[in-house]
Length: 329
Image (cartoon, rainbow, N blue to C red; front, side, top):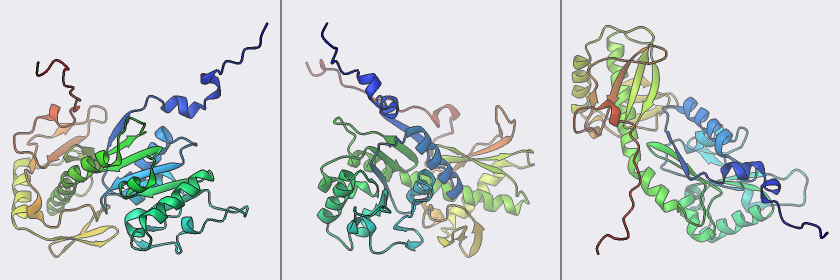
C-alpha cells in the first residue's frame, strides 16, 4: 500500500490562521479617553491579533488615539514618536543589525512623521527587510506607505468615529478604503466629544459630579447610579447657548482642555472641534434612559442629528447592497 502524502491542511495550519480565515472586518465604537482606548487596544489584540502577523497597519488622523491604541495592543512597545514628542532617534528600523542576540523583534514607525527625514522608498525597503527577517513592524499612517510597499498589512485598522479591524486579502480592502471611512467619520466623533464635555460643564454648574461614560454612534451616554434631579430640556438649552457663543476649545495638558478660558477635566483632550460653533445638530433625549442590567439612569446626547432622535436607529447596521446583474436590461 502506497503511503498517503496528502497534506492535511487543517492539522498543519496554525490555530490562529484557522481562527482568522473567515474574518472580513469588525467594527467597534471609538471610546472616549486614553484609559478606555488602551483597554480597547488590549481587547483587539486578544481577539484579532495572530502571533504570525508581521505587518500591522493603522490609519487615522492625528489625535484620533492611534498611539494609545497601540500601547494597549502591544504593552511595552516603545513608540518611536507619539503625541508627546520624539522618543527614539535614530529610527531603529533604519539601522537593523541582525547579527546580535538582543535585536528588536518589533519595530514601530509613524510614516507621516518619518517622511520628513526619509524618502518613502527607503522606509518601504526597511519594512520589507524587517519582515523578511521575521520581525514585526507596526506602522501608523499605513496608507501613506502602501503604494510603495507592494503588500498590504496582515492586520489593518482604522480609527475614526469607529474602529475598523480587518484582515486584508487579495480582494481588499485597500488602505484608501479604510482612510476614506475614518477620515470622514472623525468629524462626528470630535463634535460628540466636545458636546459631551459641554454637558459635563453644565452638570458641574448644577452640582452633579459623579457619572460614568458610555459610547453610542454620533453621540454619548452619561450614566448615573442615582438618578439626578434634572430638567433635560433645560440642560439641552444651556448647552446650545454655549454652542452659540462660539467658544474656542483648546488642548491644555493630558487631562484638561480649555473651554473659552475655563479649565475642564478631559481624558481625551486632543479629540475636539476647534470651537463650540462647529457642533451641529446637537440634541439631548428628553427622558432619562434606564440601563437594562444595572438599572442606572442615563442621559443620551447626539450630534449631527437633523431630526428627532430615534433610539433604534443610532446603532443600526449599515447593510451592504449589491447591484443585480439583470439591472439595465
